[in-house]
Image (cartoon, rainbow over all chains, first blue to last red; front, side, top):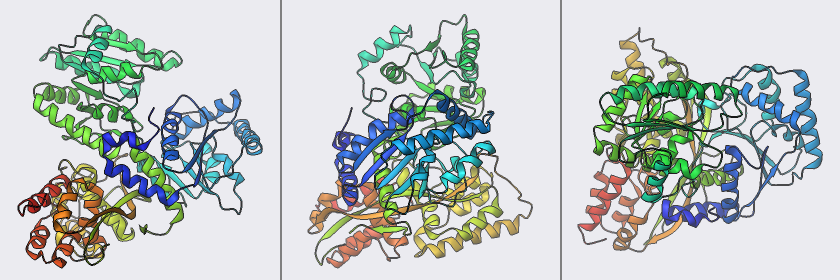
Length: 409
Length: 217
């Protein structure tokens, strides 16, 4: 795992590394504590695993702590998580009380001495109660879409959130009206991780063959959990249209269905829809399949992310980084990553997806151009180095809350 | 920026701030345009040059893009996209022009009544810019062109776009310095480049070529 920003110089260039380092010099030694709910598993832990060492390398005293809670607490926060994203959940007063009590226990146990404390997502949001008339600044980093929350949960959390010095969201669409400064920091991918690093052709070929996929024929791929919002049945429908004109294969690869009853149901429907076609490969991947996913995408001709509802969908950037044109549903964060006609196509139907896939399959030069555009787009906007830079800028922004242009000399 | 002889490349790194103001139709867009700070106007008319330095999007202007895609008012989108940003020396004047164009369209089309579908609202953002010296200092014009290929797009953006419009200098920083160094013809040639018609990659290549013609590379 990369621990130094210079490790990314080969990707983003020495000049950009130098600029980020120069910025960080203005917050050298700043004690920057990040707090979330889990040390392993999930996007936030994955992010902090990458950026905390890089911030340390930049001379920032970055640390990472995790709140403690029992099963009951994490079931409550899982329900909060769903309810904040607009999914139906029953939220009881007893659940709110569980949240309060666990927060109080963490307030007693945790060391919250820092210059800046960044709280990630709702689980630790109540820690703001430690705020006093002191030097500490507090930032609430929300990684989920709370634009349309269930009122009971948001009414409970809002008083906590409004006490922060600022809030960070991944997209403007995910934010809410708040009386505190709000910043946008989109998610990012790590180009040096197993999921994204370069692989040689042999490794890609072997992985495809291991799954019974023919590397010599065109491959259409969607990498996603088996979830109806990812519309895997729509992808199969698109593939069937394409198949009338082009000999190709379809790969639907995902994981996590075994502990998700709805996921199991969707997987079953997908298997049924795919039955009898040896060129549709439905792969239920176990955890830690990053290298396999990397190889599957690198071996693909076109990547789908044909979601009908979506958060940010970082899988899109992962595919664009590998120079694959992406055909994506025109929803959520896919629209920030797929620039229509430039890095791929935004579609609204299986027919639309098939139409664009046919266009791409028939035009290798177009695929090459879009692939290069996608790579450049991710390189400029969605790499972890940008994320590290944004963290540094956030620290600076807290020092300069009122200025639009801050002169650092 | 520089002492009397040298040119120091500065850079600008930006954090995006959400204003909390959004629009679903032209009336709300107008209300937002009248309310938001100048840095939001600058952001939405310039951010794509930095975000898409490699390729030209359909519209560089976020307002035009939204009006075309979410409201499907192609005529108004074209009018906004066609605003000659190079002719403006202040963001205030640019804001007034955008507002005038939209008001003009509404007057011509009182029944335009389009509303963006849910999820397609326009969100006003702005950039909080942090400007800092890079330590990359050119001694003379020849040295300037030797160093230019390694300059980041953010630095180029700062010296070409920010300096001229947001900081209300009359020309870009490169031309100003070169003219001070007696290279008035070269300064004029660089000043004649329209940065709004080129991607940042193309703009840098154009400037480098102008230096190469004089044997500086």
